[in-house]
Image (cartoon, rainbow, N blue to C red; front, side, top):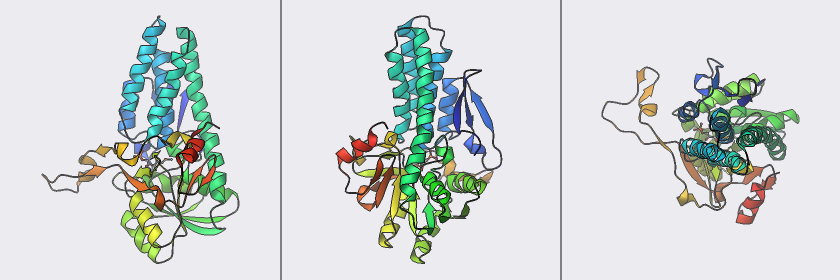
Length: 346
Ligand code: MRU
């Protein structure tokens, strides 16, 4: 893709992002100069995917500070802190969101004047965005080495350029493998109910000329049984010391992959690691009934029937063949020390 998923417009001092709810029909660029509007964009999944959410959290705090009219440093710091809280509350599962907001907030708190705080906030957020691009590239190279020269990879949801700033985590592994000359075909699960797989992953890969076919999520086990999947590669929203949290349906693929002796890889940067937490500590986002009840104008659920719309699930680490990070490839059982090592800034 020729533009970043999310960026800072220096000239106007606003956040610029691709509205992912409009894909694949339209590449709509939105300019956002308001933290409440940014929070709404995150809730609506205009901006989505763990690393992109980290960058959004960072730019969101920078935006609050940049736009503030406070003359006094402590008032400015309070505004930054409020913005971080508002943004972090939008989506609870992806740890990157609060991480990105906190990283900028700590720069603001360490500043000694409002001017310094404004400058430091924007610079830190831009550094997080630039770092994300480098991390994805490095992760991609580590992960590409794991794939056979000719293979079919199944992926779930979208862990691509649009879930990050560029390149992607799981799709970064695929892009790096293709760049290295490997023949990779991709099976993208459509990823109900919001179709990040068919709307975004298939669009991204096709734009890059990478072979991709879309399947209903429920077809994955059948294809694995037929021997038509060589590896599963997914991203993550959070990695605790015992589990990987990713889009709902990921656990099902991990169980099936283990049953069919297919390697199951998770690609995630250090900002996704939360080694201090256990599976039970993590809040899994429960989204609205409406996302399941309607497909555009079409009603899919009878009136009065409730839905259970969890956005993510947890895959125990023992089902993961390897974690692909910018620090290298880790094979479970993974110790807290390993995860902390993966967590250190490169
Ligand atoms: O609800 P979403 O679209 O934000 O969920 C995104 C995912 O589950 C991705 O797989 C995950 O964030 C990894 S992104 C590199």
